[in-house]
Image 1 (cartoon, helix red, strand yellow):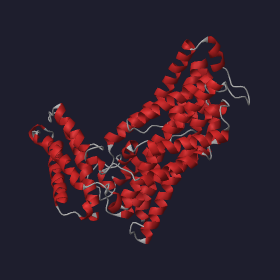
Image 2 (tube, one colour; image 1 turned 180 degrees about the vertical axis):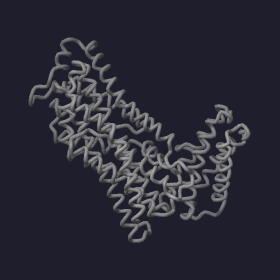
Image 3 (spheres, rainbow, N blue to C red; image 1 turned 90 degrees about the vertical axis):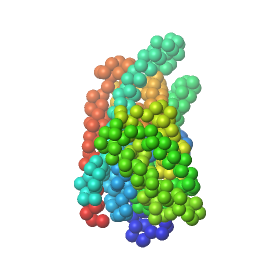
Length: 473
């Protein structure tokens, strides 16, 4: 397969299996967040709920695009993603996967709604920081801190917004819903009795939306993981998308050169002057490659990893140069640059992609994981966050807020934590009903502790594992 030596093929197989295992664990770890409300309001039987949630997760991965996936990939520096030593790439992949799986399984065992997103991103940052200690790292920073900061803000703000918006939505329901309807909406479900059909419909729809958007956001993280594996271990096949004629990037190169021609390098900061010089070199390399004879109109295998490096560096450098105050580019010039770089029409369409079989593999892993192991977290979400039984209004409010926020994050290509958004939404709905005293302090403290510890623990785990695997491989 892919013309690999036997030992490298075995490592590739193990890495892909580990990626599917991570997504499988992610499925049964996070499923409870979507199905807890329909189970505890008797809207769906548990078996029906988790199977339906699995189908929605599967569909979400297929239709969710790859924006979040590429955001995960781009957290790491270009130098680490184009390392020619395949065993270094294997060390990277195994370190971040094993650290994420260890923490996910541990928090699942103790019934804590921990975040797979925090876990994965912490693991990626740990690998990047570990790479910064390696002798081959000449660039200094081993993490894309701009992207990491953007991702961190999304992960930090989303649960706070989930908590606040659930309170606002509960307040609006109390004020706007007619009295006769309010009595049904805000009462506790009767034991073993289904809710009124209209309430049941709302709860099933919100559960479906949370499951779908969970697939479209969290599923993409699995896609990003697999692409990290493929780019690292078999770069000749996957470093760049191979079914696009590379000569079509000529128009993108022209657009970037027009932008460069409009710049006065003397007005740029010293760092951006250096970036501009490197970009000119990388553009010249690309022009030389596409002007040479191409077999089957494809980038030569031996050139693909170098082409990927050039494309990523051009994109990174030009974006930083455009933000320089001395660049003084007009809105039209910025639009030309954006069009020349983006993933739809620009150079990034060669690097920001995922084969259909990768998306299907992750969709199946997440969908199957969704149907297994959900019970522990369901009990925490349904019974232990608030002191009262989950009402119809609380369940619907928390899930509607979660679905909206996760869907928006996916559209903005930002990873968020389904676990923390929905858990905070349920907490907010409980506070809206009877105040802070309606929360179970021990559970909230444990969830908050998992939220705080996940990033540093997974970072430390992956840092240590990367150093270990580099030593033994």
